[in-house]
Length: 130
Image (cartoon, rainbow, N blue to C red; front, side):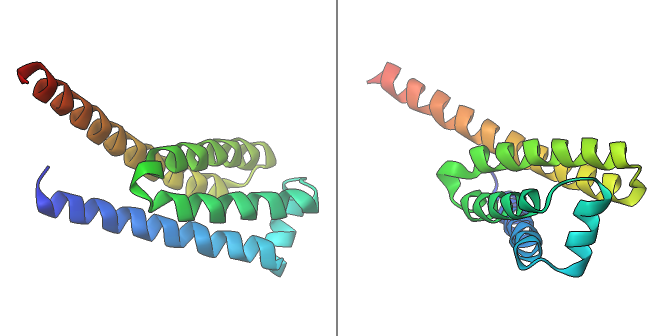
């Protein structure tokens, strides 16, 4: 993979990680906006804290290359839940925001999966020539 593509990829991963850290901190801090939002979609207060912890953990693991795929997948599953919750509650903008991050996470996971498969196929080629 070209060097500039890797750099752009890690910038995307880094910015995504920062978003989830910020979002998780807002949930854990119990900002007025987050408390109101979780009440509007009908979730109990403990779910806000749990989701905040998952977001922060996912954000940290996202920048760890060996765990990027797993973190993107876990955060993507969280965003699927967010899209469904937002749609059920009739939250137009919230659905769009969650769907946007879902697309970013799918792209991150897809690229990371491709890198994993490429590295495995290269190691098999080296083994067969040895």
